[in-house]
Length: 343
Ligand code: 13P
Ligand code: SF4
Image 1 (cartoon, rainbow, N blue to C red):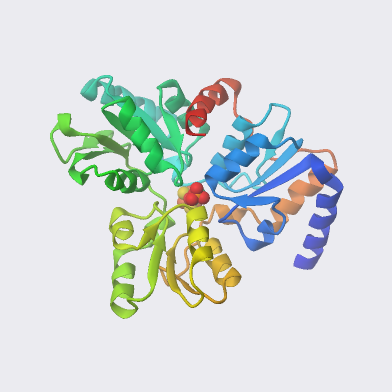
Image 2: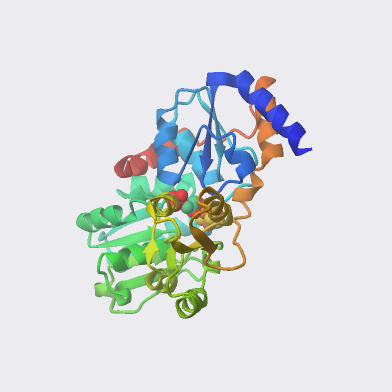
């Protein structure tokens, strides 16, 4: 039963004491968040991971987050992902072969005028690619600053792998939509909306399947029927949704906005279901709904559950490290260069 599992998890957690630190992303289930020593957005968790001295770090999040934690911790520290199937479909949309091929073609087209940026929602290999080509990582809480930085380095940037965060950020900085080209990794083709020389931003054609579920019709519906409800979304939503919403920002931003809002205020939130449900529970005096009336779960985030966490904890107590995430030394070194620029 769930009670028995909680008992087992608590006993194992207590036995491991300071030797273990548990990180929990805001999209994790409540049954997992209950064991997190800290919760945060991607940037916060990376920063916290880098400062930990515990022997073991259990990352309750997805694969690319655990890789980042491994890169930022010492080789002696073991980073554990309780379920190896907890990947990220967006990160999987840019593999290293596709990226190297795209880069070669883009160098042909534009010469040495591009700096690559990658959203942290990408594999360690992509972060390493960006690091060895003079670029940096970005998260949803610093994308604006990082894109500004990129455009002081070179005339144009390649933004991997989320076209929506890239587009939403570039629009905020005043870059016209027509000057954003899209690289299609499947067709290996650049989709242009202006002359080649005018391109400022090249967006990798990737997306988050969870945030794609928030649609302009959801916004339009609310505007018509409940004009006093504020709309707050994650910038992984499309440009059409973000530009029609009232506020957009990282998971931390979303939590902070609700935290400082007035009791009685009305909100529709466009992000992952566990976070929306937690906000509804934590702020009962605010009127909060999901922007898509059918709640939108991230299936891979949800793979980390109490049974998997209990398994990881009990194996550690028995002296076994399961599901260790280890990035090879060369990749880690190059990826660290990209992460260091951001951090
Ligand atoms: P943040 O927590 O950085 O906003 O990222 C959201 C996300 O999709 C993580 O996969
Ligand atoms: Fe990846 Fe989207 Fe899930 Fe975040 S919410 S882990 S970007 S699939």
